[in-house]
Image: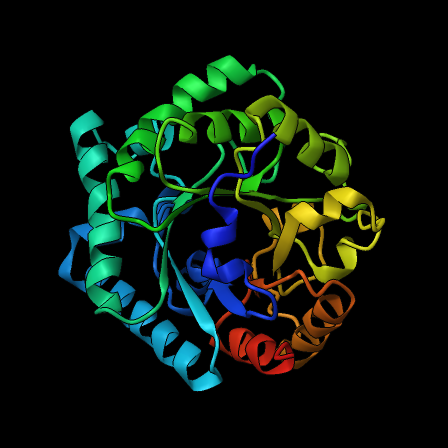
Length: 309
């Protein structure tokens, strides 16, 4: 079994700290009053106003990383820029290719040679808060290969498949990525019991994906879960060496509660920073940390400040 290219990735260096922010959509909807049909932020690329908002986010992230003295990911707005989700918004196949590529071009322009990592985001085919058990690995691979193939030629530094709910879909994306030179990271989401939404333990999911993809993922993450939801999953087994970080929700609420919430639960930024620092102290291999739903720059600054080793 291989883990291709992982030794060459700066975000995995001993003692490194890299911040990632996957909370843009909830910030746009709840704090900025932006309507995002289908939870899709990629249509912002189509307007001057939308592009300006994205540019502001990316430059602020770069400035924050420099101020904190840590690395920074720029995560693309392509999480739901796949065939099914885009078709619901009126995008045809060529328009979908174009918007995926434009998402990376905008990040690259914002980076301006600074040492950020351009992470091309891939999301689940269906609801990121619900398990999807109908797809075989083969069906899911054929589906996700469309977006993977586009993003692999985009100039991104890394593919990151986030908020995945099943081992089959994760393995499919990893296998689709294996045909390209770009490394891929797999990020699962878990429920309050530390298991995937389909009930599979996180440890089993990582082992199954590695087995089904010949160890293709460079590393694994957990996102869209509060740190306290991870305790039942972490057993200090050998599999945890493959887990390299957490991109956490601000809220302790379950996915079902968050899905039905009419107001944003932004938790306590300082408290979240301390909880993430405790994780990093216990698991020093966690070099990638950040915020997901409900987080904003306050949370990122608290995490980055608290988690310096």
